Amino acid sequence: MANSPQAKKRARQNETRFAINKSRRSRIRTAIRKVEEAIASGDKDAAAAALKAAQPELMRGVTKGVFHKNTASRKISRLAARVKAIG
Image (cartoon, rainbow, N blue to C red; front, side, top):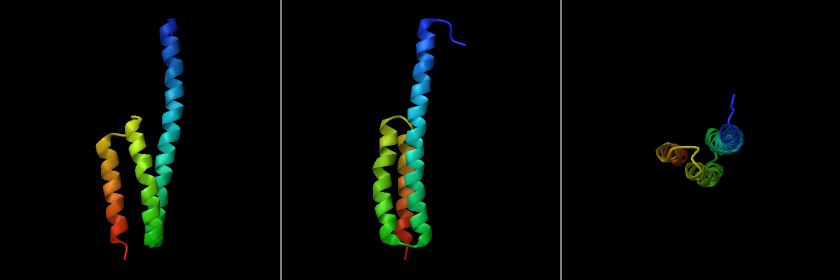
């Protein structure tokens, strides 16, 4: 357990950041899931709209340090390819 005032403050900050990052990760996963559900249903317009909404969410996660840039880019690229492949 933290003893010094600095360590106590750091522990508080870590809890706060953890909660913020957790909610941000959850929002990103939800956005990705909506794209995948639209792809599974075969609705190209809905999938494209969901992808358009998910892209800024993913890149915001990169800016805020939740995901690495290449990870987000890879996810966006793969989702875009799957949306494009819908007949």
